[in-house]
Length: 287
Image (spheres, rainbow, N blue to C red):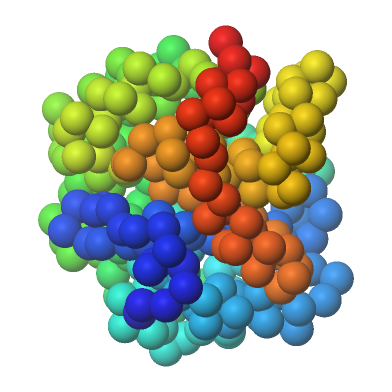
């Protein structure tokens, strides 16, 4: 799979797999608050097919989006999957009837979640499974949970392992159990807590996948971003994504949308070239 997204943004490794740095996050394909079916299932299917047509070869998802809805839509839209398409999912959480996000990290829950993702996606092996950390202070739980996933990896159900919402200490602890090919955490212009972790992972050849590229901005920070975007004649999303791509070569993007139009805008807009003055001004937003 080689076209717009891969050729424009380059590639990076997830273990022995290679993906384009511009991916797609499927969370918004579910209904409101990531619960239930989308208002327009045909539109959701169209977004996924357009993502593949644009050359995107990295889709991020989870069975707890919906729950189950997003993975089932991915299967309906894209199965049998194009050669080279990589699907990354997460386990370790569940949803209750009210939509709350709850831990689901017992040994049995993790095993059941991997099998459920396999079934709903129509796969025999998942390219990458991320352990979703629900307790930032529970490093022992990360070690245990990662051990369970490593067993499933040895059984051939998982190709590679990653981790999500993890501290640097938890990432290091997981690495003592099995190789980590990617870390998925909240990070953007306004939320720079993982700066040191990103640099450390880059030195190790490990991918970093930030989510919510526009999440958590204060009004002042948003104003600063808007000012740069206006000067460059670009959208604020394009500027935020372009900054992430230029921040470090190991950063992989997974912006999500339920609109084909917005998908195309994201893929095209992130190609924006930021100059030294732009980067310095943007860098100041989160410092």
